[in-house]
Image 1: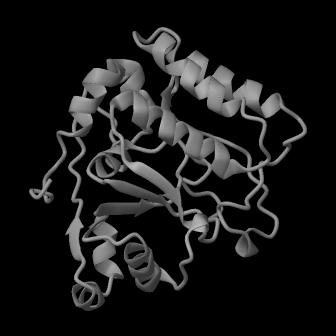
Image 2: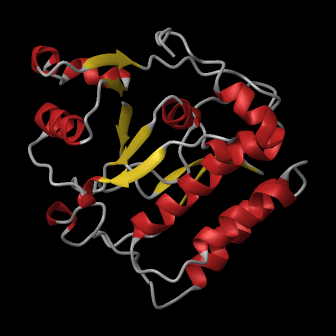
Amino acid sequence: MIITIHQPEHLPWLGFFNKLAKAELFVILDSVQFEKNYFQNRNRILGSNGVQWIGIPAVNQGHMEKTIATTEIASVSNPKWKEKYLNTVAQSYRKYPYFSEVFPILEQAIGLDTPYLAEINISIIKAFSEKLGFAPRFVRSTEMNVQGLKSDLILDICKAADATTYIAGPSGRDYLNMQSFADAGIAVVFNDYQHPTYPQRRTQEFVSHLSALDLFMNCGYAESRRIIMEGNEGTNAF
């Protein structure tokens, strides 16, 4: 069983989908603490005036005590944020060749009737994964009987999933206890993703590490899949 684990980021970047594509099981890490002003509720796109942030307003009060799963959307009773959000995306990408294919997915997810940020993020991740033809099984860590912090939590998830291989991000080298994984008979592979380039409008110099939304709008799903899988250095086993 090849698994990978990641927080449900908002409009994730290319490397997120690259790692997801290689796994049989994708564990959505929603049981950890919500981090204010991070990628859990926002990401970067290329707007009419260059790079800009777009995101979902989250309730920050008491965020230190909340998990990603329990973090609520601010102004949930006032849907104007949804209109503003979708208008920003439309103004940025309406004239792009694949807008009509991509925008409805985002529109449907943003329109979900839920007070929780994670529900929208997970809906986006699953919908885009399906369009790209990536088909791991998804499970949320809040649905698993796991505990611990950092390396211990990752190992506990791997054991609960009967993992034989864990695909880690490069930062895993800084905190994973490799000996404990070896003792458990679980191989660790680091996904050292090299960001590819693609035809990108509105800029003469390529801007990397944007939300994958920018790639989808420029290239469509079939070509995006090919481009996403270009950055496979460091993961020859896959």
